[in-house]
Length: 113
Image 1 (tube, rainbow, N blue to C red):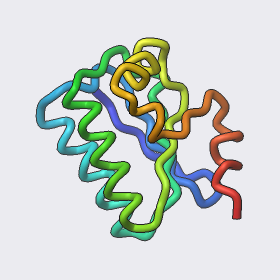
Image 2: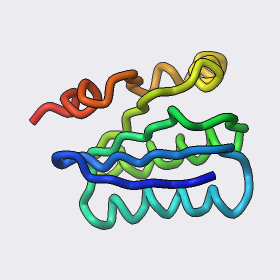
Image 3: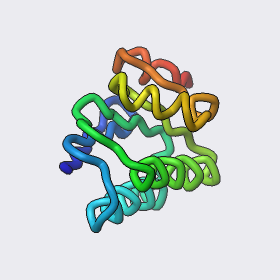
């Protein structure tokens, strides 16, 4: 799994690629969320467009990140969830928690002012 971060306007876009499964890399993802909040970056988009597979550990880290960011009065939005991941969100009812987008600019604009 690879993690790429980029600021677009005042929104932090975190792009994951590869397999998001249990292991030390998930700790890195958790750290990225925590550091973002520590640096007062509270508008975050998680781009999952290049994620080939995600297990329950990966879902758990995303939920944990969502909780961390929400407690800091921020928001985490999901971008480009693949069909498999979108189905995982539906099965686990996480689709009711996350705002999901397929267009990056639309996701950025959704934060408003």
